[in-house]
Amino acid sequence: MGEANSKMLRGNALMHVLGGMGFRMGLLLSLACLALPISSGAATVVAVSDQGGGADAAPLSLPVQQQLAAQLFEDIYNISGGAGEAIVAQKIALYRRIIDRCPDVPLAEESYWHLLKIMMQDVLPPHKKEALQLYETFNRRYPESRMRTVVSQELMKSLYQQGEWADLDRIASSCLQSAPRNQEGASSDPVAVFLHAEAEYNLGKVPAAQAGYAEILHYFPQTRMAEIARARLAAIGNKAQADN
Image 1 (cartoon, rainbow, N blue to C red):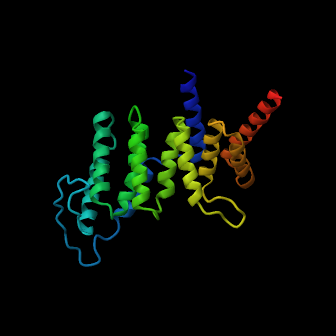
Image 2: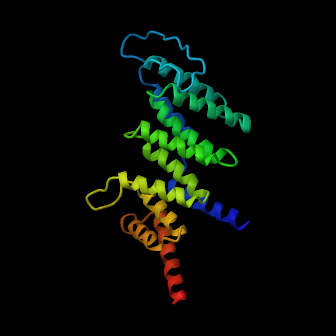
Image 3: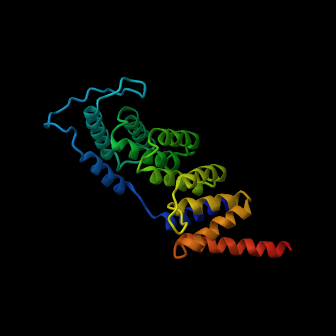
């Protein structure tokens, strides 16, 4: 019961920190991607002949990838109002097909975001190992992706809510290494700073956690993250006094 309450509190806190990014946001991103012209020439209709080919199947041309991705996303949209294990399995299969068969279309990068969310939030128990592998594949295929922060935060959010501190620590550390800082020294990824500090705190690495919380308070003092950081630092101080 205590662990369930702890997870609920972590989930509520993170919702304040990150806000909501639901299916409607994904739909807007997808429609923007699909609004791109299928080719630079005349509007010639391209027949989509791919029938469930896997990642090792023959590559498709870009126009065919674009049409296939549009078809698959429409299939996902048509079942988006449903619930249950069968619907979840269908969504996973459809997103995987976009990833495997349409890797050159912008929607493929967004599909990693949706798929990670499903694997970590909609499946019980969460498919953590599979999600971590998927995340590694995304970073390998799209090292310069504009979706990288969104995809990383989606996975870190789930790891945080589920108390997977070691994996959260590793991924947040990697995100911080690649996140640039501005002239004042503030990280471009404050969420990763905060989640890294939370992971360190829960792993008993108190000095590292204190440094992360202090960074949040210094550069982002008006955020919900700063409120939590302030409370964590107070708790650390109180424990140190009690131990002495």
